[in-house]
Length: 215
Image 1 (cartoon, rainbow, N blue to C red):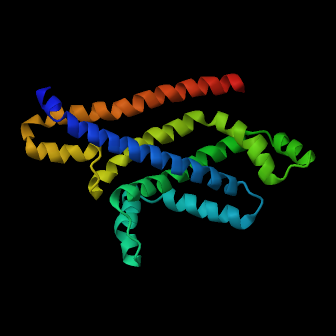
Image 2 (cartoon, one colour):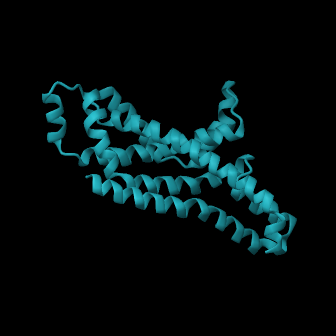
Image 3 (tube, rainbow, N blue to C red):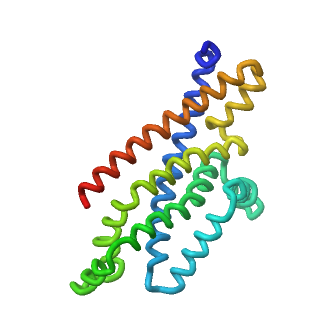
């Protein structure tokens, strides 16, 4: 316990880095994933094909490879990305594929009559999607989006291998400094992750109940 207290500042800084990456990458993934989901149900074939290609590529590529491309690959074409923004972009682009599929499942769960009724009153595809379909779809996909968020928070641990001082990076750092305190280090890291994921799970559960009432 004394070891954790002595290194409390390191845990706080790493915790802040993990939260920062998670929040920024989550916002990027939500916005991009929503756009991709709209493209996947679009009546325009090239848009559907482009979104499908994106989802299949990122969903079937290890996140570590995405990190390598952003951090080390882009400088080869004269586009240097510093580690922290690179981590946000890598995690966000990767997670967007899963957000897209979650939202698309919600869109497909909406009755076709809803879209037909929207078209009958003169709404365009984009208007019916924005005003009628997506608001209902989001209410049905709260649990899967919550699962994607929690998985994304844990995926940020890969950033430790790319010079970013987030929570997982503390493990080798503190283990090398005090090998006999390995268990304490592990406990501290696990608790820090739980401080993010458990409140997130609780919030998702509350949102799910509210969405059920609205439906």
